[in-house]
Image (cartoon, rainbow over all chains, first blue to last red; front, side):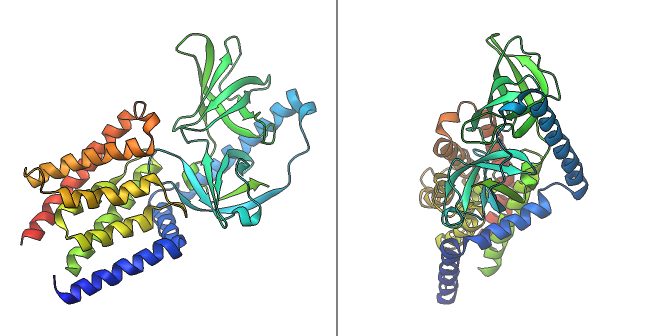
Length: 226
Length: 145
């Protein structure tokens, strides 16, 4: 290799190492640019998703009012808006990095909300950013309730999240809202809707496949509970 | 050298675009890793290092370190040093390295879920080998010229 080539490569390596360690946000911006231009939903799809999200939120409100209104605390208002910086690039997890961290008062374990819908929890905080584990991460689990009767269930995250361990005589139906019922999160926050129901492989419980009113890959800003 | 390195950057950008395109259809594939492993057979060490750090810059999604990014960066470099170990056909070694690389990535990133994730592992290996085949032969011939 010629001396000039070696020098060029050494400069490239030094510049890239500096970028990785000093200004990783430029990498996130490139990633976001590529993702938004080649990998996210079209505006029409987004507006349809908006309507579905509103519908889901209204269904959740209806379920709350009809069955659990007395148990609800005051609507949480102490939220922090954050912009999505980057996303986990592989297929093992579903995480997003947001631009609010411990310096802004974000704490691990807090709920993260998109258009009134619970989408995950803060997993780890950095000084200026925080890592959010979304409900599409296969390691995500939390207690939820389903439908107007509030059947207890366990939400299992993953590429196709499910609500499992619902008692067998529960009258689950497509369209039933799934909402949060876990300690540490605001009660009654919509998570998903039931798409279809089935009996568990061991024949002891009912379970449901779930539908979501948003495309997690298109989420650009979220609210984080303080 | 600059032309060949530029081709490497273009391939990595195409890999990233394909990855995001398939991800929008909920098909989660990792073409960048396959590209880097292929580069280990066609580029010199310093060129490979530039491309590996560039990929880390684009792929890293958080300020801290992670097992996935470590494997993504270290495995192609390890392949570079072991590439003549088997003395088989280079393309075969390349495909074998890709299969081994994805297996290592899955073991490192999701060891507890590897049994549930095996269809995704095989899909990634197949897609990685296919992508690699598309870039390996032109780049390899270019390197020989």
